[in-house]
Image (cartoon, rainbow, N blue to C red; front, side, top):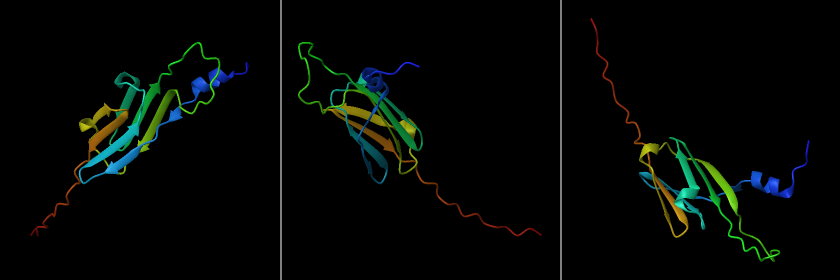
Length: 123
C-alpha cells in the first residue's frame, strides 16, 4: 500500500468549527465565526435534536510566495455536529451570514402540556 503524502493527509483532515450556543425562552441560537466563507460554501442540516454544519474556507494563494513565515489560519474543509439542549422545530430554522459570523436561529418545540383525564365510573 502506498504511503500518503502530507498533502493527501491535509485534504482528509477537517477542521472543527467553534460555536456558541445560546438558549432563550423560545429559541436556540447558534453562532460561529466563518470568516472567508460564502453562503455557497456552507451546508447546514438540522434534526429535532442535532445540528450539522459543513463548509470550506478557500485559501487565497500568492504563487510568488515561497514559504510562510507563520500560518495560523485554518484553510480547507470544516465541520461541526452539535447536540442541541432541547428539541427544536428544525423546519422553522433560519440562518444568516453577516460580517463573517454565521447565526442560526431555531425555534424550540412547544412543550407538551399534561392533560388531566377524568375517570368515569361505569356501572
